[in-house]
Length: 127
Image (cartoon, rainbow, N blue to C red; front, side, top):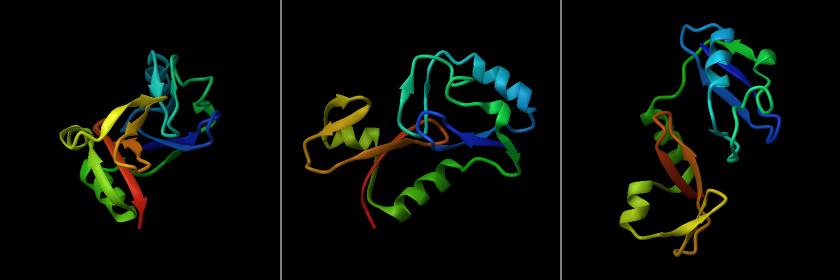
């Protein structure tokens, strides 16, 4: 089961795979988060509920979250370059970070996202 709604700060669609939990159980779990990274690429030093994610108003939907393989395949279908943090490090591309975004030395404008397993993937160059 998915719990879906929008972030108040960035207006991005958030989709949480809550399995067989109720909405109330999911909210209780999210309340305990000390910090979070939103799909809209902002990091906050508090729980997303209720200041960023008004989960009481969100809808339940049938479905499940993407697998790691589906996530990576989707990125590769949209972008020319898709690599993970390990590969970025091996290639010595990252010089540092600014507000969570990588500062690179290859002249490309990299964006990033976190996979279902929490791995950071970088991508650039739309197809």
